[in-house]
Length: 434
Image (cartoon, rainbow, N blue to C red; front, side):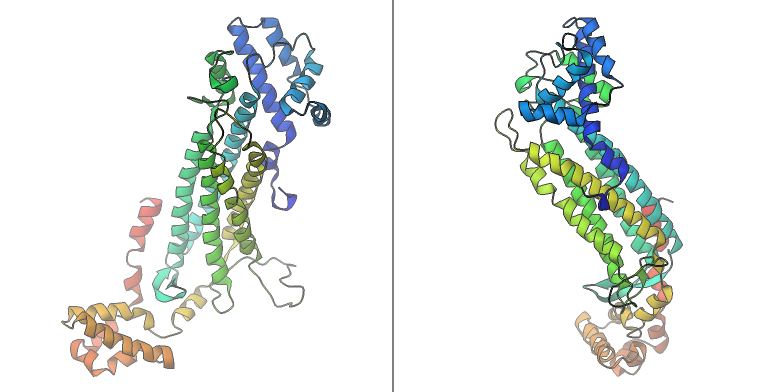
């Protein structure tokens, strides 16, 4: 992933140095387990740990691989250069390359998941704070982009909180599902290696043994993992789109923080553009782009092929690094987001009283008017407001059919804004707890 959209902790997980360190730990722990079983001499297993403080030379491994055309063999050759050929002769005993590659990949994905879980927790804290802050800040709710009925800015933040809380649960589940390892040898039968070795290695690496592997860990696990990343990315875009709409000049109910010295346009000095949330929309697309290839990786030939390998070398780092960056960026946007309550009220009153139409409709039906007639009565007055910007309540009071069913006081009561916010506390209790 390019540095512009990368954060160091996540990038470090996918560095060659980290990968080779995990490969080394897998091999060293496997040697310990085999020594415990009496398969290899104890002194040989102990000799492997002489490399525990070694910084493996990535360039040297690449040099060897240029000849061997095999990355794991290149690494094992380099390891023997540090440990000694005689001492290292039992390394990788009974194992196959996928034992190292797949177990390492899942270690990297679980570490990436831990960062993403922490990211989600930080975003949830920001969303909750802003929801509480604007719990009763009234704004107009929109359906199809058109004024519908009043809601609150707090409810907007609360529904994003609930969505991201579901994503946190999904991410935790995805981490648990991907946290498996396999040290089962060629075609996964343990013919040349004891299952106890797998159990030992997995325990040391914080994994659980894959119940049944072929020569690879089943890729439905990885498909579920990347699908979860895709869902989280879609939720990021959902929030970003709302903020982008709120920042439109003719809406301006909320906006990204605009820092001192920031420039919005090279041509138009007046511009304040929602560049961060537009960026988040683009990043979400890139994370989702990893989902289909991950799904297609599930179908492999027989006990193993490597059609999945090139895909995972790209989507593993790119999807997790991008999502980590996007979650951190969104948290910053939410933390500093500007809210304009006065504009919210002004927008809601652009067509005076119009958003109370449903209350009047229901009152007319309760007063004995058929729903069809009541709808026609309300709509004809609403259309006058649309066309002439008149006051909806005044139009109703001047309509003889309406006033025949409802008194002026009853009509007046239907324009109480508090009617629409009376259950905000109930919704907040459902989302955040009592």
